[in-house]
Length: 391
Image (cartoon, rainbow, N blue to C red):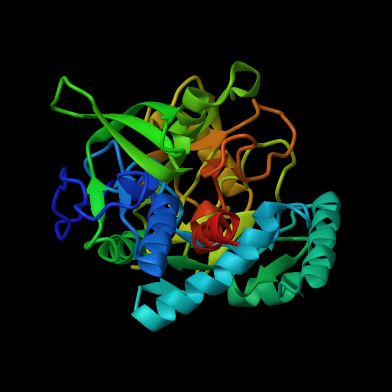
């Protein structure tokens, strides 16, 4: 998926005329990706307080939210007590419920995770046991049944089926969330230059509009850092040196497929490999049924390389051919890519989502390392931020 345009939203650079007691705004959300939109729309509509969403690009969701697989994840892969597991499972339910209520395009296609050898079969059995304890439905499909249902898929040691995995139109989802903010303040093409504690007891956010030389300072009682790839940099503006964060970046390239064969009717994932940095080069379908592959994992030095490149194609073909042997190399081409916000370098330990009000900085909530399953978790993350601030 490439960047989207949201014509219904008009650029707003004027701030609200209704002021809270101490600051220009009650809530300032930095970052207009799917998580920032979910947080902003929940706080704004739930409390009807002056709310400002700041996004440095000219459209919502252009960095990570519009550059992913559009998958609604089931909550399978992560440690049982992790925020990723908790928020993914909770978010999945909230997201499906919203899609059904508001008519947001989505499909519960289901997902197969494949075992190519005995070791991978053992990994899938462990996943199945964990899912059973979490209440996430999974079931095994034999090699014979898999060959009958999806004859083009190679899984000699069986398949773990995840029936609650699906896909969503991220564009329509973000458009819905953005529509909830039409009565509130949105500032696109605005970068955050600095953040400091304000004398009012809240925070001073120094901003700069893209075409202006001068900065503008506004104040907010609460700041939520949902800046995605830039979230560590935003956090580092405010927190002391001993709490500064070093960001890392894992690029994921996606590949489109132009041939009609092989053909599948659900999402296909390889067995997860520990330490890879992702879930392997998997097969997903978009809302129109078109196949695409990815993301792979390419560790890069910064977040700005957002061009998918053909030099990754050979490795992608090899990864895909392991489970889809009829794949035609000449029908694959580099399509788009995204960058995962990482808090550890390649080969590092598991990193959970960080969703916390920072100690000593009341009202400043950091959302760090929000990669997959951030889309699935977005409504649950917004719910958690609300609980942190108001419960």
